[in-house]
Structure formats: structure tokens, C-alpha cells
Length: 111
Length: 115
Image (cartoon, rainbow over all chains, first blue to last red; front, side, top):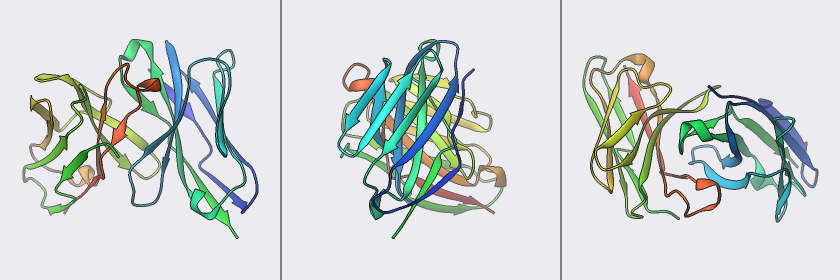
């Protein structure tokens, strides 16, 4: 099976940088995704990494190291609207198109 | 936004009653999923479908059944609801190869309370 570990909560101030780490164990790694979910809302896709390295999308970047079974989501120039939960998810080649999600990291941005 | 709706959005029911949740999509995506979300557990897959009448179990399928008679509809049934099934239920869709990482698009969720 698959398992993912990520911190449960992170607090930071506006304008700061936050890094959310995700370590995973899986038998046939295919890719790592990140989703954002605001309170009361639905998860929405942020980014996907299949190869080692950094993917940048505006203020958010995602990194993957396949050899270390590790990835992170980097939130830069934090804004109040970034207060949300962030989930990493792995796609396992042995599990078809199913995703396994981590428990989520709640990010609280303070003024 | 992907065209995914869930009904009902909120439901309160009693232990032992049957409950059916509906997910409807207008995107013609092949894959559909049902997840439950509970504090501290993230999103856990209940069942998924990879085509009409093609379904398979997820990690927390006990007590749930699904049906998919049309591409656009995926039903989740709790045959006899229990208090442990109180949760927020999300439907999601994806189309392999269409989006990077086979992105899943989520519906707005159904909050189910079993008394």
C-alpha cells in the first residue's frame, strides 16, 4: 500500500514563505500532486511532479526527489487567502488512476 | 470549473436507514470517485468507477456500494447507515491523459450526519 506523511499545521505571517514537506512510501511511484482546500470548500488541484526538480506556478512551487521519496510545496509571499489545508497525494503505478492522499497540512496566515 | 454537482448537499438521517448520494458530471470524464473526509484522515477513497458499470473498491469500502449506469452519474449507497459514516463525502472525476498528472476535479461535497 501507500502512505504519506505531512505536518498537521503550519502558522506564518503575511508575506512570509512556507514549505510543506511530504514524505511517501509506495510500491510503484508515478507522481506527486498537491491540492488546496479552503474551509467548507472542495479540494482543488495545485501542481503535479513526476520527475525530480522544481515546478513553479506563480507564488507556489512544488519540488520532488524520487530517490528520497520526498516532495514539498513552497508557498511564497503568503497572503491571507492562502489560509487553507494542503494535501499531497501520490499516484501509484500499481494502483491505476487512484490517488492516495496525505492527512493534510493546515496553513494559517496571520496579519 | 468542472461541471460536477452532488446531491443532496446536506442530509441528516437515522441509524439503520438507507441513504443514496448522487454525483453528476457534465464533462464526460471516464473516471469517477467517491471519497470521505474526516478530521485527521484527509481524503479516503471509498469506491471508484473507470467506466459505465465498471467499479472497484477503495480503501474504506465496507458498508458502501456504488452504481454507474450512465457516464454522467455515479451513485453512492449506504445500505444501513451507521454513526461512523457521519462524514463529508466528495465526488471527483478525472480523464486519464487529458490533464497533467490525471488531475482530479472535485464536487462541492455532501455533509452527512447519521444520528
